[in-house]
Length: 410
Image: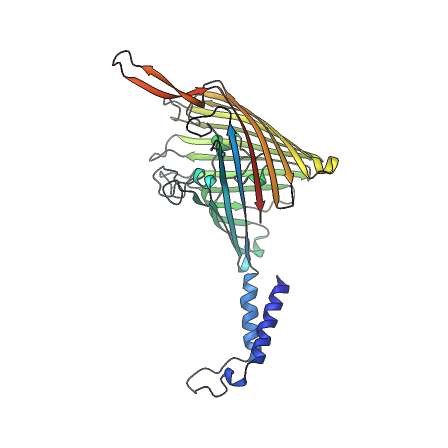
């Protein structure tokens, strides 16, 4: 950046020196300010270009093709959070990341999402309990994050974050290139939130320990849907570079127009690394009163484990193989719409064409104790009282998919 800046300053300065002296207003009228000298103009230009160095611009783009062997007539994969389109080439996400460092430890960061992922992670921007995103119509654009951080030198490592930001819970994140698998677990899609709007405080606890505590509007709320607030927090321990563990949680009312019946989730995440193997573990337990399908208390809990093998470290090939196994119980049906136990196994292969470009392939098998996965065809039933026929989609207790994808980070 400094080399470009010096080159631009030099070019402009050379142009200034080549101008006739009259251009600099030697005979300017008395009622006008005197023209700036060459040194003053160069200094102003350096200040303008120097300000650009505090900006950061990045992002990513990735897309996929997925085939569901159930061949659902709706061409929608059942109970998938971010990979929902069957038999379709899909622009999953195009993301722009814009940041700015300010004076005195002040900084701004944002992520703007476009594509199918944006339509799924849409927050409640009106406080009406509808998670339709910033466009208010589930459109394929969403402001995933926009927040300020303040970490002045005098605070000794303490920092404050305020705005809209991703959740502290879970072992997976919204952006596929930051995960080991391309698809997300059931826990990611149904057990925890995507984003919050509020304020977080992070104290300085040394190299091994970390903690964050704050107050937010709730789950995926920009404007709160009730009068209550939600507590959000995390504590973590990293004794060395090969192991870390964190306990994360959220507690507060999330139902529309009532501050009763709080929802609470405890989330544990751990990562263990011994090259060329990486293991990621995630467990969740959630509870919410008056949220079950029968009006009673709802519970959900589960466990996910991922084992990754870096082939480059093993055989010199720039690739990796990643296996995930998972089970989640939705006791009361509040999270998935059915009282059921969901399970899945996923095998993902990656080929790293470069540091920025990755090719993916993935096979996934989902199953449940209930018929929760749509398939091709319909079922017609006849009401014995009215004689009226009703046609509904067919469902089965399992679902198999294969997908290929490509991601580019810039």
